[in-house]
Structure formats: C-alpha cells, structure tokens
Image (cartoon, rainbow, N blue to C red; front, top):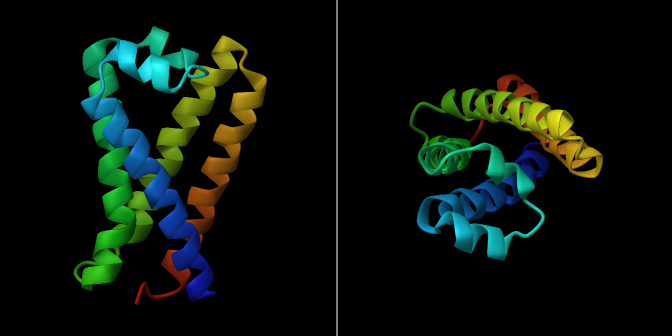
Length: 126
C-alpha cells in the first residue's frame, strides 16, 4: 500500500508542480495558448492566477518533501487535505461554468487527494 501511495503521490505532485509553475511563470495569454481548454482563467485576475499557481506548487511540495526528508511527515496528509479542498473549489468553478467534462476530472483529482490523505493518515510516510 505504501508503494502505491508513493506512486500516486509522485504522479499528482508532478502534475501540480507543472501546472503551478506554468501559472506562476507564464502570462495569462501564454497560459491560454498552452492550455486552450482552460477557460476558467477568464474568471480570475492575474494576481489570483499567481496565487492559484503558488497553492499548486506548495501543495505538490507538501505532498513529497516531508516524506522524503523525514521531517514533519504529518504535513503530507495535511497537504493532501489542502489540495482536496482546493479541488473542491475548482470543481465548484467548473460547475458554475457548466464545464461538465472538466468537472469530472476535477472530481477525480479530488478523490485522489482524499485517498492520499486517508492513506497517509493511516500509514506512516516513510
């Protein structure tokens, strides 16, 4: 189970590192060109997009670093809980916009983070 959790954690962290870095480093126009299906960015200002990118990066780092370093490993499931809440907000935005297919993807990510939080609260990280 621990190996499975690490694999899921690695995949999720990689996805959120890439997404967060893109939001932080790219302009709104460049981000829209890179991710043409991401219409939700129209609902947010430039500063809000940078905060969303920072949250994604912090969450991804929080999923991996405490377990790898063995320092405060309780932060790993806490980061997963935070990302689950983040994805609940993302799903709400998709629901409000009527983007049903993308909403399904957000719900899958929400479930992944709930699974990681549950698994890491049950099993030690190391």
